[in-house]
Amino acid sequence: MRETAAASNWSNWSGNVRATPRRIARPADEAELGDVIRSAPGPVRIVGSGHSFTPLVASEGTILDLGGFSGLKAHDSERMTAIVGAGTPLGQLTHLLDSAGQGLPNMGDIDRQTIGGALGTATHGSGLGLGAYHTQLLKVRLADGRGQIREFSADTQGEMIQAIGVNLGAFGAMTEVTLQNMASYRLRRRRRALPLAEVLQDFDTLLKSHRSAEFFFIPFSSHALHLTYDIAEGPVSTHPPEQDEDGLKTLKMLRTALKRLPWLRRRLIGSALAKVEPEDFVDVWFGAYVSERRTRFNEMEYHLPFEAGAKALGEIVTLMERAFPEVYFPLEIRSVRADETWLSPFYRRETCSIAVHHDAAEDPTAFFRAVEPIFRRCDGRPHWGKMHSLTAQDFAALYPRFKDAMEVRRDIDPENRFISPYLAKILGVET
Image 1 (cartoon, rainbow, N blue to C red):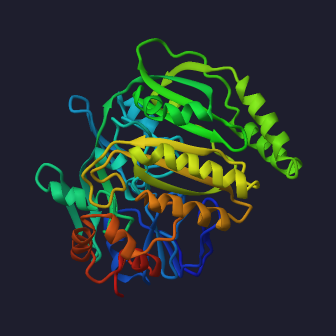
Image 2: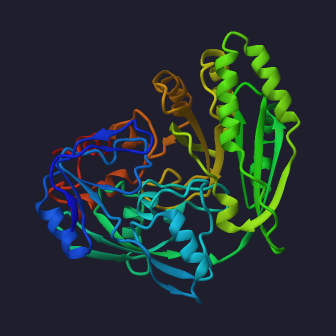
C-alpha cells in the first residue's frame, strides 16, 4: 500500500477546501482497502480527483485515494456494457471505452473527475432525453463501513442501486462499477451567439430541439453562446482551436479595466459576440463534449424544475449586472432527464441546471449568497459537489426518499466510518 503516514496537507482543485488528514491511504486491492476502513483513523473520506467545491473529502482522519482501482476490467460488445474501476478518471475512461467500440451516452465538458466521484455527486451533461452518469449503473461493487465487500445489481436489487447510485462517498467505498453504454459514435457540434432576449423567449425550444444543448451566458454582453450536439454519420472534420481560455482572459481584462464604465464594457463585449462566427464540426463523442479548463474557479449549481429555468436565469442576470460587476465567468445552463435515484437532484423531474462561477482567486461568498435565494424560491436542489448552504433539514424536504436513503446508509455503514462533520450536517447523521 502506498500511503502518507504522517499528517499531510490536501486541497481540492480550486483551493477552496483544505484539510490536514492524519493519513492518506492508497490501497492497491480490496484486502488493503478493507484493512484501511477497519483500522485507519476516522473519519474515512474518499477522494476522486478533488473536483468538488464542497468539503466532501475533507477529513482530519483518513483520506482514501482509490486511484489503484482504475481501468477497464471487462466489456461486452453485444450488450454494450463495461466493468470499470471506480477510480478511473473520465479522461482515461473515454479512450478505453472508445477503443472497445463503446461510448458514454452523454458527458459534461470536464473530464478530470473519476467515474466514482462523478457517480457519487450526480455529475451530468445536458439533454432532456439524457440522464446523468448514475443512470448508466447496472452493478456496484463496494467496501462497506466494516471493510466487507458487497455487490448490488440493478437486475435483482434495483432499489439498492437507486439508493446508492448517488452516494457522496457516504455509503461505502466503490471499487468497481458496471455501466450501460452505447456503441461509439460521432457528434456534430454547433455553436452560435444569440441575444439574451431570444434565449429567454425561445428557452424551451432551444434546449429541446437537439439531442443535447446548452447555453453559456456571457456577463455584461446581452448575449449567450448556444451549443448543440447531434449524432452525426459523416467523417470527423477539422476541430477549431479552443479559445475559451483566451476568451476568459479577455473578459477578466475588460472587467478590471472598465470597472467604472459598465456601459462601455457591455458595448464592447456585446459587439464582439454579435460578430462571432458560428462553429460547426464533427468529432468523436468525447472530443465534441470535452473542453479544456485551466483557469480555476469556484462554482454553485442548482437543479430547478425545467419550467422554472428561463425565469430564474433572467433574475440572476439582472441581479448580477446590477450588483456584482466583478463577475466575468459565464453562466452555464443545461437540461437533464428525470430519473429514479433517491438522492439524485433529477429525481422524478425534468431539470434545468444553472451554474454560476467565480474566479478561484477572488471571494465568491457575496455573489453566491445573493444568487442562492433565487434558486431556493424555484424549489432548486443543489449539485452535491458544488457550493451551497443547505443542511439535512433542507434536503429531507427536497428529496422524497431522503429518509429511506439514510436507512440504507446506516445499514452499509452502521459505525459511521465514512461520516465527517460536514457529511453529518448535510445528511443529519448523529455521531
